[in-house]
Structure formats: C-alpha cells, structure tokens
Image 1 (cartoon, rainbow, N blue to C red):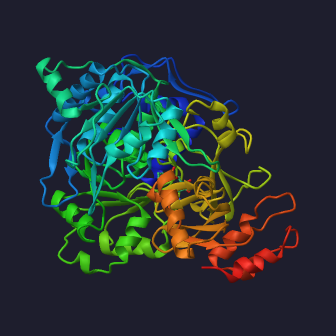
Image 2 (image 1 turned 90 degrees about the horizontal axis):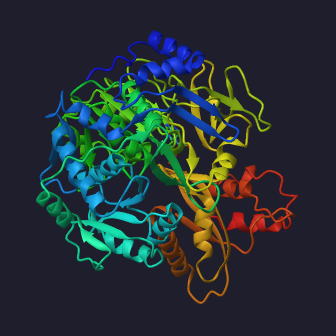
Length: 637
Ligand code: WT7
C-alpha cells in the first residue's frame, strides 16, 4: 500500500487544510479515488445542519470489507492484518494474515446468513477482545447488517435498553471473557438481558473461557457448530453486499446529558474514508509497521483505529485481550517488545495508572521499536505527557494528542506525528476538512487567538454522525440546535496565541471517567432505583488516575443499616443498572440538595464542594434553603 494523500510537511498540511475548506468536494473526491467502489458517486457532498441532513458520496456503491480485506489480497495477502495478544502471557498469540482474515470473515458471514441475518438487520455484539470479535464485526459489514457492539463492562439492564432501542434480533457473544485476573460471564449477562427482550431470535456463542452456560433450544447456537456447517457447505466465498454510500454501517451507544444513552449512527463511505485518512495522516503509518491501539472495540476508538482505519489502510493492527496492569504493570511494554510495536495509541488514564507504579516495570524493556505515540479520550495533564515522552518514547517519538468523539467517527483536532508541531496538553490543529469555532454563551463566534469558549464545528467532515438511531429529532436537538448552523461538541476549549487548540473538558453534564463517557443523569437514575434513596445528585471531581471520579450526594430515608453498608448497596445497584464502570467513587449522605426556588439543583455548587473549593461557592442567596450548603460542605468526603 502507498498513501498518496499522506501529508509529509507542515507546509503540505497548511495547503491541504486550505484546500479542504475552500473546495471540500474536490478535496475529499480526490482522496476517495484511492478506494474501491462498485460505482462512483454522483455528488461528493450535500448538507445542511438545520435538519440535519448530511450526505457524502451520494449515489456511490461499495462494501467496506472489500476495502478492508479483498483489495489487499492481490498485494499483501500474507501480511498480518491482526496480531492478537491474549490476556494470559503464557497462552500463544495468534496472527491472522489478510488472506486468513478474509477467509474467516466470509465463513462467518455465511454463518450469519444461515441464521437468517440479512441486510439492514441490527446485530448486537457483546464479546471480549478476541479475533472473533473483529471477525463478527466485519462479517456484519460484509452482508450489510448493522452492528452494534456493546462494551463488556455494561450490565444486563444496559444491554436490554440497547437491544430494545435498536430492535436487534441477533446477538453474537462468548461464554465469557478474560480480563486480567477476572473472567466475566458474558453469556449469563446476555441471558439476564434477554428475559425482557423476547424479540431476540438468535444468539451465537463463541467458546473462550469454558464457563458453563445455558443454551436455549431454538434460540442459542454455538459459533463452532455453525462454522462446521459452513465447512460442510464447502466454505462458499460470500460476496460482499453492495451498499449505498449512506447506508448505515453501525450503531454505537454513548452517553449524553439525559438519562438515556443514544445510538450514534455512522454510514459506510464517509466513515471509511475519514478513519483511513486520519489514521494514515495523524499516526503517519508506514507500510508493514505494527500499530497497537489499546482501546476496546466496544468503544469508538476500537472501531475506528483497531479495525476500519488500519485495515482499510492495509496495516497490521495489534489487538490485546487483557489490561495494562496484569499480570504486572509491565504488560504493555512486554507486548511492545514482543511484537515490535511501532505505533502505540492509548489513553491518558492508562498512562497515569502505569506512572503510579514507578519505573521498576520499565526495567529490561527495550521499547526501541516505538516510533509514534498517541493519546485519546480525555485531556492529558502535563506530568503524564512528559512521562510518556521521556520514559516510553525516550524523547525520540512524536506524541499526538488526538481530540475526537464517538459522534465524529475519527480524529478532528490533533497534531500529525513528526509533521506538524506538538505542544504538551494541546490537541493543537484541526485536520484537513475540520473547521473549529469557539462560541460564547450567546452563540457568538469568538474570533482571534488567546481566547476560550465552547467548541463547535462549522461544516461536515466525512466521519460526522448522521443521526441517532430511531430518533432523528434527538440528534438535531443534541448537536445542531444549541448554536444554529453549527455542530456543538459539548466541550470547552481554548485557542492560544499560536492558534493551537486545547480541550478543557465537557461543559455539559457528561463525565469522563477513565476515558469512559458517563452521563450524570444516568448515574442518578440508577442510584434513585435503590430502595431508600429519596433523591440524588451526581457530579465529577478531579481524580488522579481516572481523570474524573464520580461523586454522589444522596438523600436516604429509613436507615436501619450503617452508612458503609448502604453505600455498598447503592454501588451494587449502579453496577446492576449500568455496569461496574459507573460505580460512584464517593457517596455522601445529605439532608437536602441545593435547589433554586424553581426546584433546579445547583450543580455548580455541588461540583465546587466535591472539588474541595469551598471558598469558591459563589452566590448562594438565591437558593431555596441556603443552609443546606453549609451542611453539605461540612460533610464532604
Ligand atoms: C469526549 C468524547 C474519541 C474517542 C474516545 C472518547 C473527550 C477525547 C480528547 C483529547 C481532551 C478529549 C472530550 C470528548 N476527549 N479526546 N485528546 N483531549 N479531551 O470518545 O466517549 O465519545 O468521548 O472525550 O471531552 O467530548 P467519547
């Protein structure tokens, strides 16, 4: 593979950005020429942010798996597409060449067909980080089924909500998943979800942990048995379904400021081109390099930068089943040395967690294969940035700080490794095709440098979300109505004297806990389900490793247990309703919450208390009962 659109100098970057803004259609049209189409487009772009209606490459026909797999068979068939490193370092790793991955995707695509899955059907995938997860995702894309991957840390209730919202009739899962010292009984969680989802027709179960599972006749089948049936059919080569450019590729649920997660929808052509373009340019991938993105495929980062971006670029993508600290805090570095990783793309929370173990886990690690480092998911603090630079990159590897979102499909603001300047804690400059603007509370654009405001984007790039599944109005309201004719990101941002962007964090009621996005309203709803809880309010507070921690203020009635036990009960409730990732770090029992006379909770005050900034509470005289603030401050944990 070669990438004629790979930018090689700061000057080239500036030219590309200018062109992308002045003439987006010919800019993206030229890039699209480097992909495989069944039929080319009639029009590159048509859009308005009012509805919103965003259409890239209208009239074009393609299949993303022909771009990710088939096209490489002529050139790099035997190159590793996926290197899989298991949770347990004593188990053998697996390598799938492009040829082998193509074969397995076709085989499983036939399994899906045999089980009645057709184009447009929603398929929920709930698996651990094993190659079969990648195979399942790509097999859906091959036959035009819409995949919706759910992260293994979500509870049965969360799965049920998503299955119902997506009306998903098919599920692909495993008996269990290994993560560090734990094994997670995935199929049993699915069974609990299915109690309230009688519309599910089929569950396909892959054996990973040999955890005993119950298999319901007529509904549940084993992956291995289904593959055997396809083998006896002689492994027919499953032709890729011809898809419209704007057909749905996947739904991925993400949290917002309301209690109910929304299904972000990405479509085939624009998403493919944008993930490929950003992968090739930001990480500056070179043919035959090994790229290691440490995210889980249950999140957008895994979709875009373990699967679609790298595979469409013919890259070698390393997929890791485990966690950075098991069996010890040197695991990432062992993997880097073992597989000669060239590009490492991880999250600030992982870096901070590994930093906390000191330098001992780095002893005897060479790390000399590394060429590029990246971060994503949350603002990176100065200390973590320098530790990454010095101890991992040995001051020789450019670090890219990539800002983006589930909704953006791919990286929007980032430096390009070794090509455009880096600046610690700054995502720096927009990618070609991306026009950031800062706006004030009233929606007026703030021009010039050395300013800050709410971050919006002026025009569409190919990877932008198209809708939220089943509720287009919600998409419009959430992203396109706060500021007319702008996409609103929900992030605060500053632009420094050099015009570099630094993301300062969410300005809405969304938390970022260890790079996981969690809505405060969602956590409150879960806490309120616990018997005895009258009311609750949840805010974030700075947490040394997680970035943000979850702080819950709870009004509780009828205490016949001691506080500590009630706290554990509440935590267990949240775990059951959302999943372990949303467990509050601190629970403070209070007698009242600070409310305005109209009954609105003043979260600003609760945030300040949680942050320990009691002197900055501001005006509390407009509160219904100003005395509660004193009480709450005194009881701070
Ligand atoms: C939110 C999106 C993008 C994939 C992983 C998270 C925050 C993301 C950065 C960064 C500062 C960042 C933002 C954004 N965020 N990357 N480099 N610097 N903040 O995807 O779950 O959709 O969360 O993560 O607040 O809005 P997500």
